[in-house]
Image 1 (cartoon, rainbow, N blue to C red):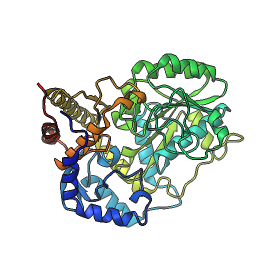
Image 2: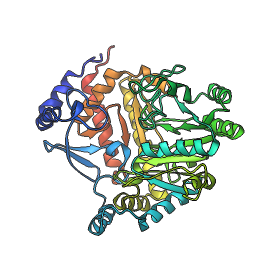
Image 3: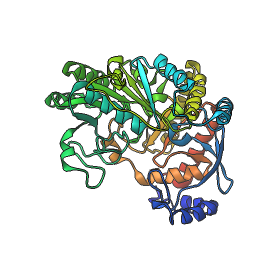
Length: 442
């Protein structure tokens, strides 16, 4: 019988983390909710002290296997030697210049060489800024103002995309995610359902004369690493081409799907793409790029439709050299090995859940994975409304107590230092959590 409240797991968590509790109490005096990214979680979040390779330590000195790597932004794990060498060298030479730097060219070449749809690229400091610029360029290029986005997709939190973001599904309705947004903005954003070609095509056609772009994640990141159906992306590609609308892929998360990102995995190519997270190897970064005729709108010499793009820390050398060093190490063979480890982990999760008659769906592309305690296939954001939230919470704290760090909603990522021993450790931990929290009824 499943215990509805993870009393043991949380008690054990509190017992082992007094320093995190102390710092969280102090943090609440100066930071809303005691944190400065996203929201906190009860009873309080762990405060981290250091990371090395695939390990991470909290303030109380407890070591855990890091199976999330700062929201999947650390594909090489913590403190990679080559990345550290590059950063140390650059630190001595300067961290930021109001001028071009050779590393801009080097990282831009890597992106353009690997991502088939990108002819030219520009850098930002976050994935949010990258998706913003894709939208700005789409409006300038098409002469239209409206955008279409997917229900449950997160592209940052700004007016153009702050509708039907991560959380409960509201389709076909539109929910404003920020308080007191201008009401007139609601009409400029069209919501389409994920992995529903028929409805999405019809909605796009009905609004084609107003749409500058359709923005889609090939894998819904914040909603639980839900991968797109190939047919869905193919249909979006076709209808946008037919209607003169730009197709934008948000690959902030799905860049880790493989050597050429999710678009190479699916062999479906957009007009523009936004990148982030793993691109910086742990440093703040974003990038956007696409077809030459669209990106040329960023040239100063462009008349009429020129798109302004500036930022004091865009392309800062620290992020650039970290990105270059990271992606030089992410070769096709490395991606293949990561895929193999992740496949083993997914299979193991399914097998162990089966031993305890626990319904689970494991989603994700490449080295990314997510657990959904749900007996139904996870195809879109609305399917996660039926996830067992009590069970998710219990497993999250249970894994922490077993020495495994993942996200609160059990998203995870495999890093290059990991081997089969770390995969086995995760699976042993999961089995232990299930065993002490569930008993079979015969």
